[in-house]
Amino acid sequence: MESPTRTEPGTGMRSSAPMALQAREFLSFKLGDEEYGIDILKVQEIRGYERPTRMAGVPTFIKGVVNLRGIIVPIIDMRIKLDLASVDYNEFTVVIILNVLDRVVGIVVDGVSDVVALSPEQIKPAPEFSDNLQACHVIGLGTLDERMLILMDIEKLVASSDMGLVSNLAMH
Image 1 (cartoon, rainbow, N blue to C red):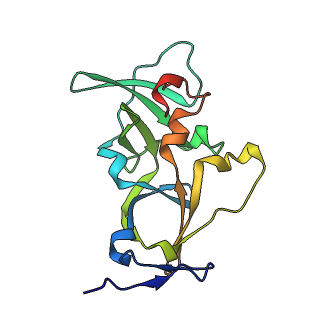
Image 2 (image 1 turned 135 degrees about the horizontal axis):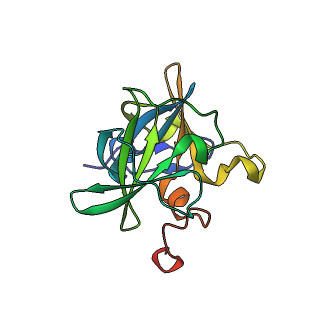
């Protein structure tokens, strides 16, 4: 039996790949009024916020490090990294522990919403902005009913040169 085909949006081209296999899952989280999404496969765990140990000479968006079962994990405040208004940490503030590019890092977010499965039709290309908006870290916009998620390429963000977390040798 032949697998069902579908038309790729905007191209008129037929695809024989089953749609269910092309859906991607994202962990959605809040930063201020906006909702973001990152590939669920990069998420190792979600933890409550605990104050990290400060490190001298690191960028301001790196809050410090925590010891996670013997692994020293740098903690990145996404609000500072993305030039958003600062916020007081509260009981909803969480750290998402990620495993990206063979490195464990944590990102501080205002709260985690849920895991969202998005089909290719629900992922729209990101509009082009000037470089200062760091649009290169955005892979698209996910639409789900009335919600819109800013889908981030967390590997590109962590590997960016201003982070200093991943050597150029680790990037492929």
